[in-house]
Length: 76
Image (tube, rainbow, N blue to C red; front, top):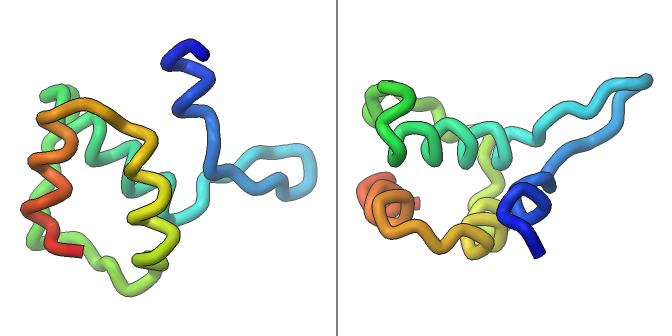
């Protein structure tokens, strides 16, 4: 399975649009951060909408060490 297919998950269909779940949106942002493509401050994140069980399950699909290290800093 290609990497692209591996990361195309975590969306819900609303009307005719695919919208990322809060967990998937956070994962995408963190992934971009781990690749130095985006800069956000972890302390500024509001994680109250994140389902921690779902989040932990979804992050297992990523096998990129900088991403894993960033996740550890979040302490979710």
